[in-house]
Length: 191
Figure: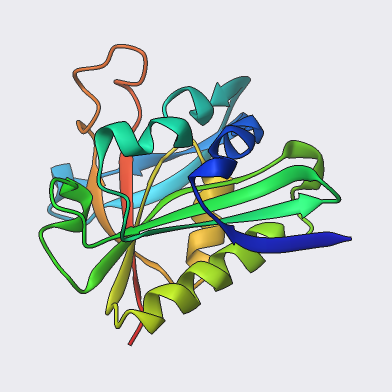
């Protein structure tokens, strides 16, 4: 049976054990009729499968060294004592550009579910707990960043009622490893 709870920094080493790796089988490619004046469409296209591990970019054990996390909330899912899911939500933190300097915006900083446990509703429960927490703080919106090669995540955010509001083809241009990826930023109204 899966159990869920809000956790503190003592659980961050366990949180970091939860895999964020996945196999990319398709991506959203931008289609820009008339060089964008005709709109921008996202078209899902198959790609040669490859592995992507977001865990190398995000480590909970490093949060406090980078930010004041006193206004953050971390939830975890456990199968017995085994950590199988986690989600981190950030709010009211100076220096976090994703928060846009707003006091009424929170960010889904990270969400992860161990590969063998995906598709069982764990991510949904973690999302629901984070959304309830954000609403309890009076947040008007939740912001989520992902990339065009994480189609499953995009579908999940869309299912939650989030709206794709920003597309940046060059957000990662300075990093050769991910320069070809497109940043997709979603917003979910919480009011």
